[in-house]
Length: 141
Image 1 (tube, rainbow, N blue to C red):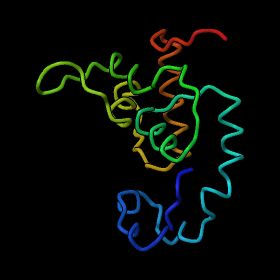
Image 2 (spheres, rainbow, N blue to C red):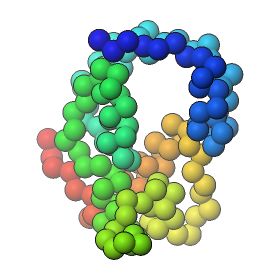
Image 3 (tube, rainbow, N blue to C red):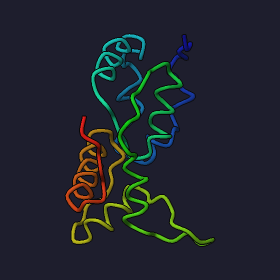
Image 4 (cartoon, rainbow, N blue to C red):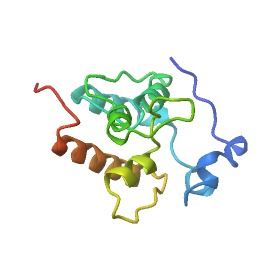
């Protein structure tokens, strides 16, 4: 069992509060993860998941005791091969979500909001576009 730390002032200057419209005051009184953990795990048990950078997202959740099925490709890993953005030291880089969006949808003016729902919607659009193009392959169940 992972011990849950209290949410407090030490998080007031976290990256997300300085780089999105989410404010510390919006969540300081939110219920703890332990209050909803069982319901979240029940959903995770039913579905295969992916994310944009599964190592980060799934690592975060697994460090809090969640079990995640990992049988769908990471969106970022596929976008790396689609976007082909070179690193300064050679080879392709893992594109930030905004870089992948700009590469795959060059005629849009979208700016990443760094908010869960907005990010999920746009990352799903990236996945779906790569799927339609034949770049993102998922084995049938």
